[in-house]
Length: 335
Length: 195
Image (cartoon, rainbow over all chains, first blue to last red; front, side, top):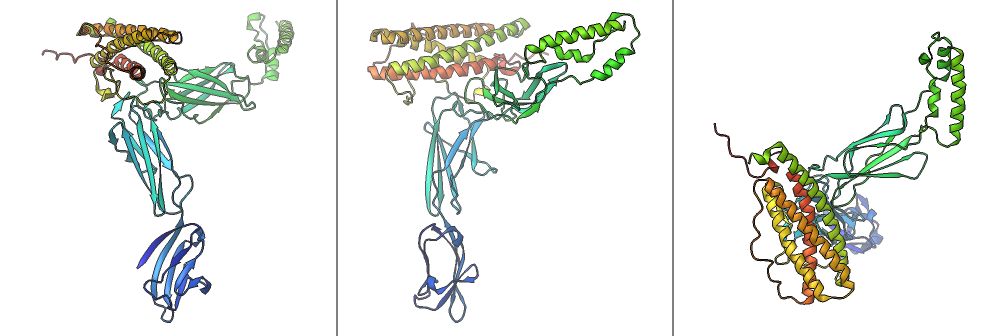
């Protein structure tokens, strides 16, 4: 007969060789390796202050015949500590889910039992196939002021522990982050970035239960985030981006009326539109111009760097004017 | 029934729903502030559990998503008419208690009572648009206040305000459902076209 026995870390374990007498001559093995006689008290095997490495198969053989007299699988572990439990509704108003885990492993099998009570009613939390430490509940009532009480009990061969959460319907509402966040530069606009996103697909009815959004963005070179809260719509144009700097952008969502903000979405990167440097090429084109009309003279694109939005700092304005005058004079020469 | 479905009626319904949603949002915000003041002034524990209070319409709804538009309006109207009477009772009790510290609470209660009355009127307008018309208010006035101790009255008041805050959220959701185009928002099913 093969057995399994569970023992707590740090305790002393005594194994008997089945029905053999105490003074019988026996040999014990651990995972096939002989155990030194110093660990024996008669035919009993004594393991002092067991640790996790001592888990394994222990076998006892009769001294002379080497008949297997007893075999056991020793699993060294710990009783469960208080489990960590969380409940959340990311698909309001359909229902909510609860998930749990142990703060430290027990190293032996555990079983979990969850009970959900709403007022006097016991509700069934259906266990998910994956992940297996999760279950979900459908709301039978909405807008109730009566709190939900969820108790999770974890049990193993060495003990049990439990935890209870009490909450109301609104408090646990937390959507998933917005999806498909896209940030694009705006052509000919060096300080703008167009950001768009979608409602999380897990949110079942955004029309009746609209979400509001929080956008945060910063250039990679700075640590400080800018924030914008948006009460409707799934797009926003950033108008104060630093020209030519790469930005990191994220969005979060919250039900318009209740609950808490989602986690931040996956970050997207974007750089505002910048003018391609064509300074030398364009001057060559100007010298070939033969038209007498001033209206046909196109100022070189480099003058666009004088656009107010593109340049940071007031000193740049004087430079722009000077550049403009020089270029205007240059153009007149060729009319 | 045909009038309720005309384009102008649909526009009016949408407009009334949008305004109603904003009213409900403001009302909820004010009720939550009032709850904080109430709990403090009345010396209550904010986390105190209050059993279902008799005469206070519970916001909790089963199969909420299956309700028709008319049912939503009728349930809401009944609730806010009840809250109007309950808040008026609370205000009366507040005045009887006197004390300077309670004057601010009295003003906050009166402000919320005004919003509740306005919202009830808004709901009546929506029901008129459904060609249904609001039901008459039964009875000569509010039910006589139950004989309660001061502490019991305070707890009852807490229950009233909590349930009202819940209703304000539900009402916004109800009006959004009503504003949706489609069969879910219409009042009664249209009579079948005769062949």
